[in-house]
Length: 145
Image (cartoon, rainbow, N blue to C red; front, side, top):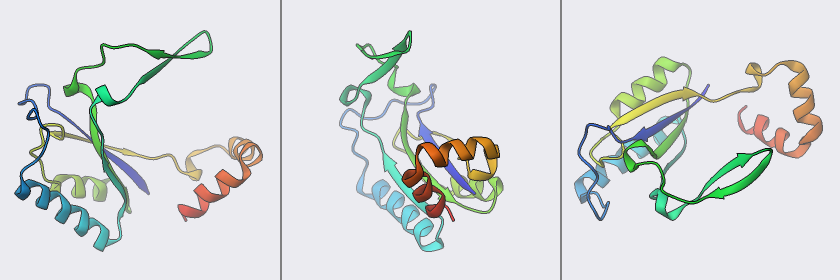
């Protein structure tokens, strides 16, 4: 089972520092955690996200997409990064999340959610997916085993 573990700031916690750079010791702790998950064979991906000011928000109105001008959501409400892990159960994903370092200010709260797999999708919907996106769907389901 694949899970995404997203990180965000605690709304009641301290704001991240102005330069956003962690100490060498904290960065080392994060990298050792990534290495541990990689060595265990459970880490699929792990990335931090840049501040919202470096991105864009796209909304929809009457079926048409458009770029939303700021102000953007407060930084304490944004996802600061994520891990994607492939483990045997929700409990195992939670056990990895409990071991994750903290201290960036944008990772105080971790949310663990299972990613949708082929077994979660009704057969007729899988048929539509395979017909509409044959190469993409084959690569996704093959990559997931």
